[in-house]
Length: 341
Image (cartoon, rainbow, N blue to C red; front, side):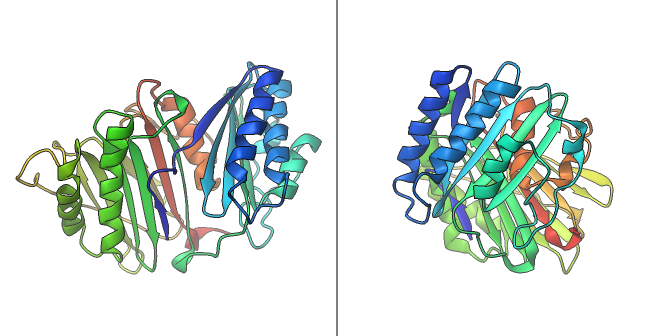
């Protein structure tokens, strides 16, 4: 199970000059030093290639998101154009064991692809996102769940007051939490909610989860939370929110908005009223949950075939387009892999 308390946030490394590539390489080297499953020098090589690619082909440069993931490292390069080619819209070639390995890229990015356990990319005239997961290939979760997230702290570094978690079992549970404000105090509040989530696994009752999170956050500044429980056998997603965590469910060519509810957790004795929202779910369906660091009104309609890409790529595109620079920003994407070719 993926649990993402402190340390799950991405570090944003802006790439606008040659010296920025060197700074990225050194930062990734420090990050890789404690990851013993990584081959020596691989993370630095991939980071250098991603940074150099941004300098050579993006206008005006871009940024690389980096974080530790279990025994590996995740790197995501993001830019705002001009895009690589229309061929970027073609789905990646499925090469086992990862459904997101790609082919046919320019020679530069082939270096990244060759060293990545998982690799995917997406490009339009609005820009390009390249995703590379380095390290051991994670075992496929029960039910074929695929998920990824982008969690960018205010200012691009330091502790994020947002956090997220996924419990991929026969039924999947997903959570996004936002501690009030930002910085260490907000991060402590978010960690308290994630700990409550971990203690309740397997999650079977969203109302009980919200209650436990509320109690766990009482010793902190508090926060807001959105949680979902997905039951593929019943073809249903159940959503509960306290505060401004919102989302959408995409299934069968339709989308359903997940509504936020007034209130905060941990700041008052009575538990805010929890109302459950029920949505249809099916093979290939996708859930997107976002914190309020993502502007309201976000949409995927202007990004052809984006929902076919790796969940972390979807999250990075949404954060690039709709993220607020004045707050922590998180996008979590969970897909039901039963609908994948």
